[in-house]
Image (tube, rainbow, N blue to C red; front, side, top):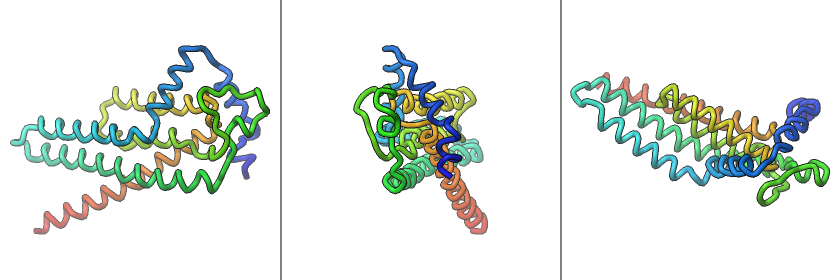
Length: 208
């Protein structure tokens, strides 16, 4: 099973080297920045910015347009709720899965001298990539309130963070893909639950 779903018949290692072997000073700095931006410890900053944007968007909506005002308020409230709840669930899953699976990171799994590591090398708990999961979680949570241009920028951010983890020698492509998948699934499940809850309360208010 591991050979099929993780090793990909050798493609996982081949793709790792294809990315990890490319290095020059500016690229390394950009990859380090991508990793910094994709750190889950940025959650407090990011959710604060989202909450501020929500206040601005709702406050600038003409109050006389009641339907539009309610729609904006609900949409932004749901976005903040999804982002916050998904972050908690994703963090719990990541912290449980990493030691449970305990996949080796590239510096341990591959022959010495074949992995280019930028920063402090890590050796264990490779699957899934927490940075990749968090980057996907951020963008997927905000997707409903993003314009087309911001969605394109968000997609770039997710790819950037994922590539940075491979480029810096911290994760294999399979770890990154698993992180993306986990972050997206968590957000979709939480959003479905939040929307169901909102519909339920909406029906109750209509009855009253």
